[in-house]
Figure 1 (spheres, rainbow, N blue to C red):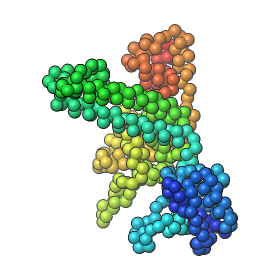
Figure 2: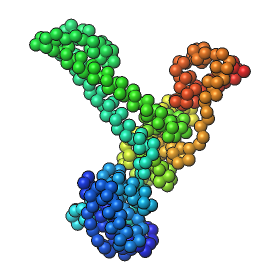
Figure 3: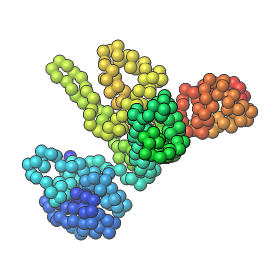
Figure 4: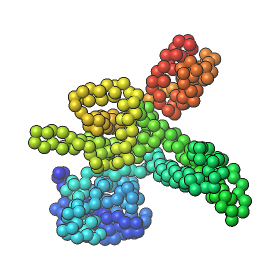
Length: 403
């Protein structure tokens, strides 16, 4: 618990249209409570009002990732220390009741007594762009899945001829075929079904184009935001975007790898009783970030020799698969923390292309010699997709053939 400094401490209960602010002194006594509109002019009035009661030490703000995001950014731009405040304890809320004034006072006291310690995400850099694009990406992906399922379900009860033509095709081929339908009078069930299928198929194709564009943007932005993270084994554009969003633009707000593990729900939780000493999976934290760590672990268990050797050793010690994955996620969280807060420089792979072209070797020739696809080597050369094992083989092959 931090020692209160002389001065004024603020707390804000945020809403869409109106923010309720409270100020307390260093003894925790309420000095005043006031409401302000959730606009830039309102933010300025709120800050002037708080500073009018004395020297402002710090402010606790609820909902810094939603309704309080604008206020948190404004306070930070005015060099005010802002802390993220969780909603009041439910047991306390049941005992004392709830209203906006009570919540604002609780936020101010949380800033005073050290209960609130987390710095909010700044939301002013490339990671904020990644977050916004990922929202659109997930929405588009879900919409395309829904349209694809509707098109598939129409085939189940379609007239026999349509069903025979489409039921053996996969999703993209089915959409391509249905998009070319030329339906006649929709009074006929066959023609009406064709019209419905064509509409859904064209929606599927439009969503696919949007999805490809958003995926490319996420690929490019995550590579620019943190090349070292993208170069880690098992980290692609999707996983990197999730982890970057969880940490925010100001990843230094995470004080340790244990803090990141707790944020991702990968910190071990005691589950011991009597003579049994064990830990269980953490069911809290950011579940998307937890899923990202799980995906990294699954990839490494498939193709990373050190991870597979570790899993084999822990299995021999009697650990279950769930316990091994829990341990792996904790180790991965430690590695990700270092990559987020202190990323190491990534080697420039453009020289691979220069060496190959200088030796007059085509991409197809190199790919054929390495038993891979030319697009894979192109991705390595353009530094858009880290494939460490293939890159190592590619470098060795160039050493022998492009001297």
